[in-house]
Image (cartoon, rainbow, N blue to C red; front, side, top):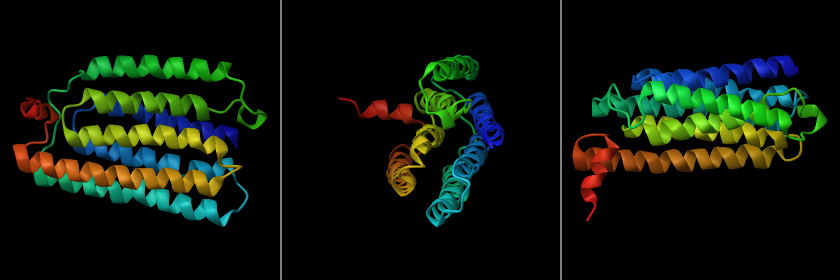
Length: 213
């Protein structure tokens, strides 16, 4: 079971690098959606015995991360007529290099941590830290608000993955808490998107500097 779990987490880590290297917003949204679906299925491998709470929240998580939120982001992208992040604050190549270095450092650090026996040989910790780093790079390195929201989603995926270390003890709290944070965060981000678009007729967050006194 650990091998299949590591394959899924490895795919999610690979998608981090793909996300860091693309400037097309539609492609970035699809990558984040695919990563959400992959990581949404991870609890079923960590806790394979049938648990209705795990199955229900896994289904909700997959639907929200893989379909509902990406659909809203695609709609916002089309409504704002924005297709590319052509001038990111951190270039695509530096982002890839930083993301790769962060991934290697995260995996090396995770192998040194004193984990529980069931987590030995698992990429849960290393994958979560690598995903958090990738999400942070997207969040601070992109100039378009939609790309930054995708960075927030990747960052949240990393936190979600780390929280699954506790899924054996408190599955309902872990799943519900993360899902609630995600919904609230996207709700706030949607309001910010709308205000930026109405004020500047653009989703470039660098235009917010105009508001400084």
